[in-house]
Length: 109
Image (cartoon, rainbow, N blue to C red; front, side, top):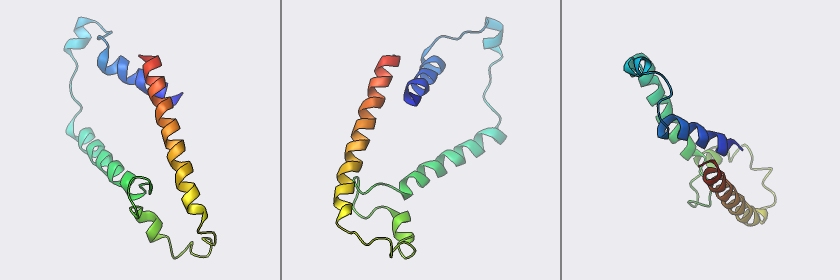
């Protein structure tokens, strides 16, 4: 449902026509640098932070956060054979979610 509303927000904002008056359209301007620069920095950090915990489905041993916390959770990893089944379930859930998002985008369009 969130994908539907986020795509609708994108479509109305960037693909639709301007809904205000001509006078309002004339006074539109870009945000000042005091607002834009922190948002750009936060966006870059969000992208980098997203790759810190990348799932093993995309790359073997790429999850930096898991390796960093491994000494803390070493005792809780007693069942090593469950990890292989977990990767299959993770890939299946990511695939289902991706298909559902695409369906919601097409429905919203």
